Image 1 (spheres, rainbow, N blue to C red):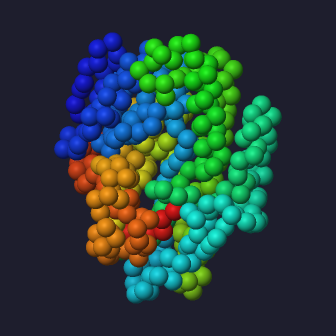
Image 2: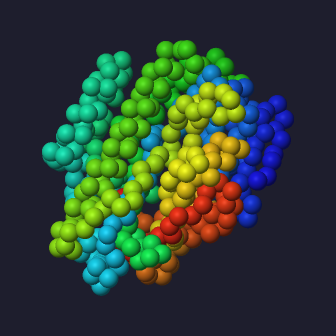
Length: 401
C-alpha cells in the first residue's frame, strides 16, 4: 500500500503496486480528497482509472454529506455468480447453441429488433412478480419526482443492458461449471443518478465555482434532497440486486433446456454490488461509504472480481482490511478508453484474443477487447492483503450487451 499526502485534504492510500495509474485519475483523486467531509482517507483499488464524477476503483468515506456523481448513474451495478453441479464434460463441444439460448432468454443490447435496447416487449410473469415487491417504494419516490415514472423501470427488470455488462459460462479449477453476470439498475438507476446529480449541482450553484470539479457537488446530511437521494439510491440498489437474480434464473433455465439434463445451480452463490453507497461503521464512527468500482470485502465476505473479456475471473473472500474500509477491486480496470481501443485494435485482434471463448467477435465489441484492460494477475497481486482467492474461473461463453 502506498500513501499520498494531499495539501489541504485527506491522505490517499493506494493498493496499486505493479499496476499503472493514469495522471488524470490521480488528479481526480486529489480533487476528491480535498472535499471537507472526507473521513480519514481515500482508499484506492488496483483497478483504478478515470471516471465521470469520481475515480473508478475508489472508496470514498464521508461524514455528513453524500456526492451523487461519486455513486454515478449505474447505481447498484455489480456481479452475481452461481456454481453448478455440472462439469466441463457435461457441456457440448460446440457452445454456440448455449450462447444463443442465453441471448434469447435475457434481453440485452440492441438484439432482436426490440424497440428499446434490451427491454421486454411484454414483461414476463416472473419479472412482474419481482416488480410488485419494488413498486410501493418506487411510488413513494415518483410521488416526489414524477419524471422517474416515465423511465423504462418495469420493462428493464430482468434485462442485461449494454457496454461492459455481460453474462458468462465459466469453468473453475476443478472444471466445475459456473454462471456469472454483470449488470445494475438499468434505465431507472441511470435516471435517478442523473436527476440527483443535477439537483446537487443546482443546490450548490452559488458555491460550485469553488469545487475542484462540478461533479463533486454534494448534499449535506439533513437536507431534503439528501434524504430523498438516500431513499432513491437504496431502492435502485435493491432493483439492481433483484435484476441480477432474475437474469441468473433465466440463464439457468436456458442452460437446462439446451443441455437437457437436471443440475443444481445453488452450490455456491454470490450477489454483490460494486457501484453503490451504504452506511457502515469504520474506525469507531458511523459513516457513509461510497464504493465507485469497488467491492465490500469484510472479513469472510464473499465477492467477485471479474477479469476482462477472455481473461480469468475470481471468486474471493474478504480479509477485512480496515485501511481499505474493508474493500477490494471490482475488476481488472481499463487501461485505455473505448475510443482508443477501437482505434488501436481490429476485429482480427479480437478474434485472436478470444479464441478460447464462444462470444461475439465483431467491430462493435472491440472496445471490450482484453488488451484494453489491466493485467488481472497484477491487479490481484496488488490486493493480496485485501482478499484471498477461493476460486479461479475461466470463461468459455460470453454474452455481451
